Length: 134
Image 1: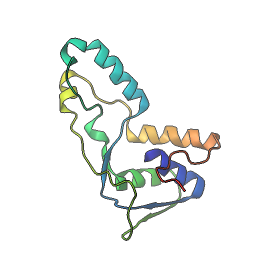
Image 2: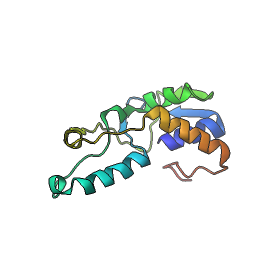
Image 3: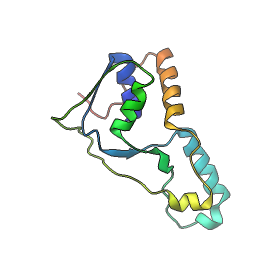
Image 4: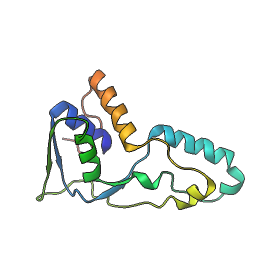
């Protein structure tokens, strides 16, 4: 979702957000790689268990993400009251179990957005981030 939002903001200068209060959770690929290493280093304690990987700071609404992006990029932002997103996921995740072992994310939404903005400004792509295909 974040990749798509950044793409829309930079390439079309327009973002329409449906179900702005729907919650999602996010994790940067570098933090995900760290989590794999963490699991390998903590194999005896983690073996046979299931862990949510991420950080509580990354449980955000679609509105949170769009407004944070709007602080960084100028584009038209509209929160639609009519219509719906084809992707109806709406959830918040607890990371207490893995946090109790010592893992937390290190890359914030701000840092991830800055990275995506820089990357998309130099790379010309069509929108491979959309979950809706025509």
